[in-house]
Image 1 (tube, rainbow, N blue to C red):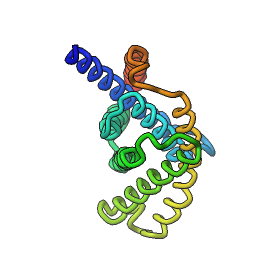
Image 2: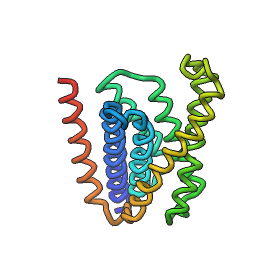
Image 3: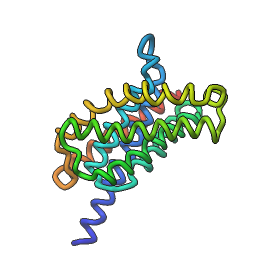
Image 4: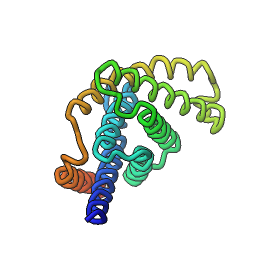
Length: 208
């Protein structure tokens, strides 16, 4: 009986993680085509949506480290539908790693809006710092290396703050849905399967 329950939980977790990774990849794939004024804010909007996806998945799987698996799937999905961009991969992984660390530290203490704001600020600021420092001083991408701190500081303070402002209402709404792995086993599997199918169909149309 215990083995059966364990196998069922494993299948559920796998389906939810795959669905979340593909959904994040789909958002990245089509999000970068945002037109007009939204183009400037696209990375910030994508960060907010990604935080909501990661939080929803964590509530359904309760697995530490799931965010990193989701990020790797998102990178693979985005790369299959377009071109592999190392900068995008680095940004996605930085956010996922910081998310896992953040919720490992905060656990289930993140409930009200203020707590979401504080948690998101810690995750996003650290992720933006890690990404920008990585690109500037390790990869030495010309866009970052040519200006150094003059680009890092406004990126973290201005864009990071905007990303937090977008992410916090989204994650708060997700938390208010009271997602629970035990209570939503069957729906989680069906919804995860439906999302995965939808993402695969979108990818096929994208490649056609």
